Length: 169
Image (tube, one colour):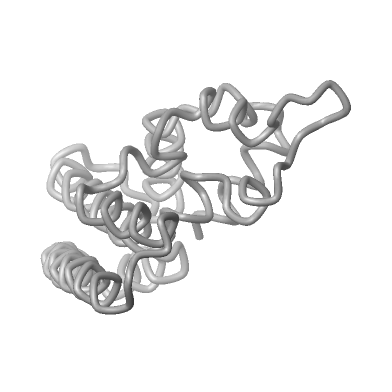
């Protein structure tokens, strides 16, 4: 869902260096309201905050599992990734997006694991740091599941189907 939505945003000329996660989230919420055909403000008032919590929780899960590829430039950074003027394009992209890429800043555990990998730390140290990141990710998945269950509690079966088709459930 996020990848398709991001492609759409970029294709419409609203993405690139000016990507605003809050605007992206708001557009997705508005699209969902329209798809669900919710006309009653009271009904939407019950649904919207739960949708936001699911989206936030999903972003946290993605951030905990995809930090290296998006927030640090991935393999290209390790290979240099520069242009003919000797600048590093990946570093320029990171400055535009901020330190954590499109998902926000990395957690301390992810930062520590990345440092251990970059420093080629001993296996035991990497395993210990990896376990911390994996445990953190499990907690975030549990929070996502709880947010999804909470959202389901206010949806009709048709709305639940639409939310599922939009990648929320």
